[in-house]
Length: 217
Image (cartoon, rainbow, N blue to C red; front, top):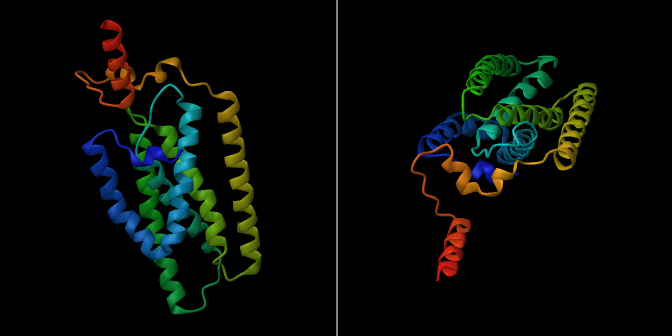
């Protein structure tokens, strides 16, 4: 469930995701710290993979855009958690204003990505899964940063319950109800259906070719 974020469908796909992560992702890492960023990134990858397998079991999906959507979801969770806190110092007012401005930009980015998610060869389920996972995990992590014990407890419990419900139900459904189509057993043939002159160099294809040569001899 983590390997798809390491793979991409081509150079353009790779460069697009890298560009977003170098700008927005790096900014969030500096703001949150590497550990929080990594937790959100990886848990969002799991959430995106699970929902992709549930709603699109007939396709092979790769790319890190689900994790990027998780970062956006976590930023929305941070704004929601800290919105109700009392602002006592000028620095807190400035931080609140910056968060609200960023929230508008993140919300617009989420809307744009989700609109593009419905064009062919784009996995809308992975984007949605990453967004939901980032939001619920972000609720847990950012609730711990609140000054108010009441809000910390409220948002923390909300985040924990949301995480348990989301991951437990989706993983249970995926393992017990989802059956991938038979054509995915031959990945090389799957890609030949969509890309002309596709040449597969994977180990499975080499094994099949060697078997054919031996049988021919």
